[in-house]
Image (tube, rainbow, N blue to C red; front, side):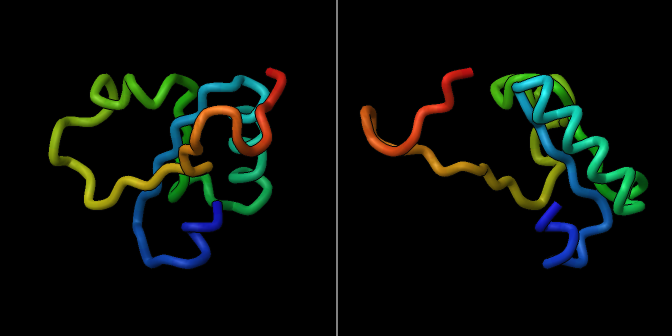
Length: 77
């Protein structure tokens, strides 16, 4: 959602593993009238090539950043 406000990208795709976070993202896009520009996929990011051809996107970003083991906050879910 932040990328939609900070870029001029025509299409933004998000891949979210957790169903609750995916549902919230879809709802957020709807409430902000971004359904035509921002789309979400409920799956593991490791499966991205099941949805996109290699070389078909301009930029890939991940959030949150990966951390060293035993550091940072670990989501109990």
